[in-house]
Structures are given as structure tokens and as C-alpha cells.
Length: 90
Image (cartoon, rainbow, N blue to C red):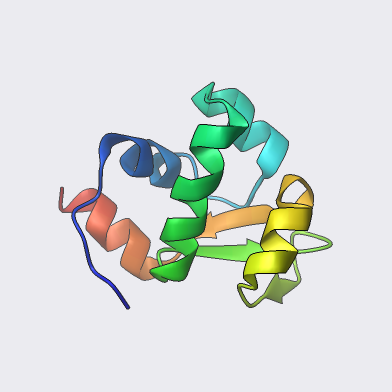
């Protein structure tokens, strides 16, 4: 797990993920272009700070870069305990 300082976009993403949230709702709340949101979200998942769910909000899946690239608009997301701790300690 690569621990780095959380940037403003990552902080805002975690801020929206206290509850399971569908990608379209997350994108709308953050008002970021997909090209900007996608890499930050993938980075948070790879760091273990965000969990992914697919095809429904109850089925957690492991991160797979190819699957994420193809299906992330259909995913649901939730901050992990580690993500919430990092978010709240910033």
C-alpha cells in the first residue's frame, strides 16, 4: 500500500463516500470531468482507501485495472475505514 498525502480532489472524493454512492452521483456531486476523476478514484482504490461494488451496491469486488477501466461508470463506491481516518486527519 502506497501512502501519500491526500490531495484536494482525493479529499473531496472521500468526502462524498461516507455512504455507498453510484459513480454517476459521485461525478455529479464533484462536477469533475471523467478524465480527472477516474485516475484519482483508481488511486484511492489501489491505496485501500475506497471499496468498489459491482453490479449492485451490496457486492464488493476486488480492484482489477482492466475491469475498472471498462466498467467504472457502473460501479458503486464507499470509503474504507482507512480512507475515513485519512480524510478526517487531514
